Length: 232
Image (cartoon, rainbow, N blue to C red; front, side, top):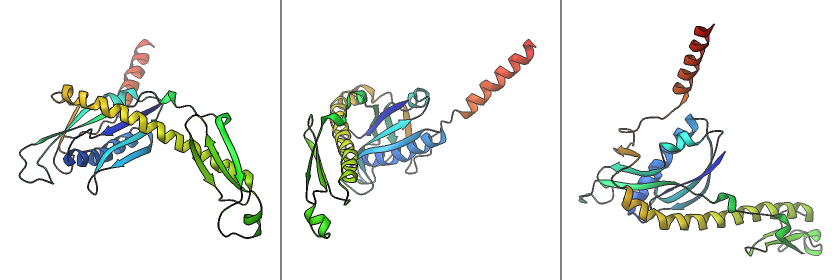
């Protein structure tokens, strides 16, 4: 099972961008503790160092719904602004959402047009006189890449396909993010009073409880084992 998750500050101020960066560390740590593979697909840096406006994460595991149930929605951090000491506000909200529509991202190698040309720059006789460089264009989106890493046209073609696929995927994710960014503002107004998690303190650990489901699974196994013993 794969899920694309976005942690976003929406249009929140710098404090919310700081909270996104902090929450990301907690989120990834908890995912790791629950044997969930993850990959950061895209991140948008914040307006200051160590802040993030948003980050998109691809999660991979057999079961994700139980883990995400404790995360999806609004997250509240309670504390005084580290950027504006005299600011009276103490509750800062960010959002954790699933980016639906990942299945709509289609990439077919049949949609690629290849053009070979001589490699640019220095590199010896082969580079200057043989058409080893490859320009690959994804016709449906217009995205293109130029590859001249290798002296082999075949190797450059393989590299161009991989890089073009990554580029097209990133563009689709950015479009999904924009769509979620618009809906986030509505979610924020509705869910401010009902966050799925609340944190406080600069260490983000005071109200944080590690959500590992190993204990629940082991407890269930023991109960089933005892039940079988009773039957026998």
